[in-house]
Length: 134
Image (cartoon, rainbow, N blue to C red; front, side, top):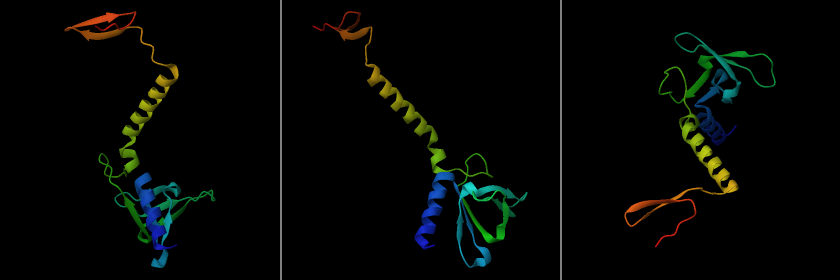
């Protein structure tokens, strides 16, 4: 694996999941481990090993933590968890999707208000027939 490929996969994993793991067996090679393969971490006060299960295997195997380099964005509410940029903007993305769905529904159904209101000569007028401004 070339250097730019390693950095790219690391940054992509960090932005999408908030975590990334490199496996450095015997400090000779670097293997980026996808975060979807990590099924657990062992250790009570510090991480002693990572439990990894590739999609082609039914069983997980441990990787010692001293052979790994673990990166994570800190979670603002939990010191033992990770937080990704995608999770941080999740509420804004949901709101934007709902606004878009509302606008699409409005354009498909049309805008047909049954009551119209307007200001004329300092007072509000309400009519069911239509607007007739002087």
